[in-house]
Length: 78
Length: 402
Length: 144
Ligand SMILES: Cc1cc2nc3c(=O)[nH]c(=O)nc-3n(C[C@H](O)[C@H](O)[C@H](O)COP(=O)(O)OP(=O)(O)OC[C@H]3O[C@@H](n4cnc5c(N)ncnc54)[C@H](O)[C@@H]3O)c2cc1C
Ligand SMILES: [Zn+2]
Image (cartoon, rainbow over all chains, first blue to last red):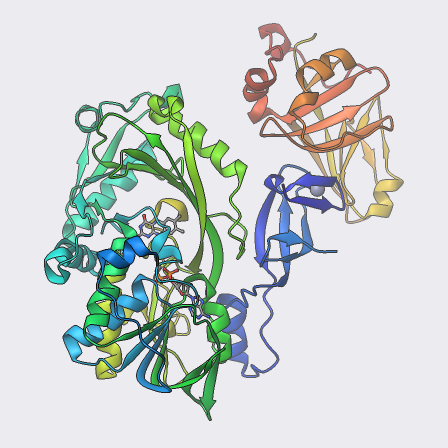
C-alpha cells in the first residue's frame, strides 16, 4: 500500500488523496513565450523516474502538498 | 512468442539490416498494422518493426478487446466506425481467425442526467453513422436477464444506450494476424530489440539506436504505447501524454451465456464474457501516472463490489487473474496521429485505454501518411498540432475517462 | 450510546501564528484542521489577531460521542492508519471509506463527519441515527 505523509494530518493511505499531476516545467530550451505557454498548459515530461508532483488531501485537511515519486516503480522517495 | 503460437502462424524471422525505408518502433497492434498496410496497400515492404520484448507484449495483448464506435464527437465516431468496419472483414482479408464476435454494448444510466447523456449519445452516434438506440429497462432485461434492475437498491437502471455493432476479438490473434500478413510480404519484425535512442542529422530523425547497432531509416514511426514520452524525448518532441496504469481481471468460468458488453459511466466499470466463458471486468485507469505494472488489491475490491450491485451472480465467481497495462493517455482523450515538428519522425499515440478498437483504422491511416507524405482526411483532426492551434478534441468517450 | 449531535461553530482561515493566538468565546472544541485553518465547534465569537482572517459560521458537521469501548468496538477497526496516543488530539482521514475527523479526549472520542455522510456513518459503523427530537433541538453547544 502506498503511504503519503501529509504535513497537516500525518501518514495516510494514498486512497485519501487526489492526484494533481506533475508540476508543469517547460524546459529552459523553449524560449518563445507562446511556446512556453503551450508547453505549460498541454505538455508533460511524463518521466519514467523521479517526478515532483502535487497531491490533494481529500479525506483530511483539504490542502495540496508536494511529493516526489519514482514513477517507474510507483514508490515515494525521500 | 512460444511454440504453440509459432505453429499457428507462418512467421519468418530475419536478421536486422542496417537500413530500411521505414522503421517502426513498437510491435503492438498499431505498429504491426501500419507495417501490414504499408505492404498491402502501398507496396512498401522495406520496413522493420522493432519490438523491445515479444510482439503483443504491450497493451495490445493485455486489453479487454472491446471494439465499438459510440464515441462523443463526430470526428471520433467516424474514425472508430471505419475501424469497426475494417475489423468485421479482417478475418477474410488476412485469412486468420481472430475470434471476432458481435455482441452489442449497453451503456447503463442510473440517473435522469445520465439518461440525458445516453439519449444524446444515441442521437449523435446515429447522425454520424454508428448504430446506437435508446433502450428501456424491459428491453435491457431481455438482453441481460442476469441484471438486477434495482442495481442492488443503489444504482437503479433507468435505461441505456445500446450500440448494436459493438464487438470483441481475441487480442493477441489480432496482433499475430497483422504480424503474419506483414512478414509474408517481406517486412522484418525484430523481437527483443529495444530502441535506446534516435539518430539525428540536423533537425531530422534519420534512424534508431539499438543495443545491437544503429539502423538508419527514411521515416521513423513511434508506436510504443505507454513509453512514448521517452522515445519522443530523443527527438526533442514534448507530448500532451501521461502514462497511467489500467487494470483488469477475469473470473473463473460462468456456465451461462452472457450476451452483450455492459458499460457503466457512473460506476466507471465494464464487463463482458470471454470466449472461454470467464467474466472479464475493467475499470477506469489508475489516477496517478506510473510505469509500474503492479496490480492493486484496492482495484479488485472496488470493482468486485460495484459489479455485484449490477450482476449479483458475480459474487459466486472466483477471481482468476488480474493484470495491468501502461496507457498513453492524451490530454484531450483523443488519439494523436501523424507528423511532429521533427522531419522523419511520426507518431501514433494517445491510445490510452481505448486504442485496441483503433488498430485497423489507425494502422491504415498511418501507412497512407507515411507512403504519401500527406495526412489522410480521416485523421486530420487528430494531428499533434491541434494543441498549438487551440483545437483540442475533447472526447471523454471511454468508460474510465469521465 | 447517544444519537448524533449537530455541531455548529465557526470556521476560521488565518495565518498560522494568528490561529495559535486566537480566542473563542464559550465552551468550545477547536479542531486545527490545517496549519492555517480551524473549526471551533461551539464558538459564536472569535478574536483572531489577523486583519485578513476569514471567519464563517460552520453548520455542516455532525458528531457522535463514543466511549473508548464503543470506539474500539465500532470504529477503530475501520481505520487503516495509526491513531494518535496523546490527549486531546485530532486525527483526520478515511475510515470505512468515509472522510472522518476523530477528536480524542480522555474519556471519550468524538466522531465527526460532514452531515452529508451522516446516513453512511449510521450504515457503515452501525452507529445510532438521528432521533427526530434531536434533529430539531438546537445543539450549538456541545457537552464536554
Ligand atoms: C487493461 C486494459 C484494457 C483495455 N481495454 C481496451 C478495450 O476494451 N478496447 C480498446 O479499444 N482498447 C483497450 N485498451 C487499450 C489498448 O489496449 C491500447 O490502446 C492498444 O493496445 C495500443 O496499441 P499500441 O500498439 O499503440 O501499443 P502497445 O500494444 O502497448 O504496443 C507498444 C509496444 O511497444 C514496445 N516498446 C515500448 N518501448 C519500446 C522501445 N523503446 N523499443 C522497442 N519497442 C518498444 C512495447 O514492448 C509494446 O509491445 C486497454 C488497455 C488495457 C491496459
Ligand atoms: Zn492532510
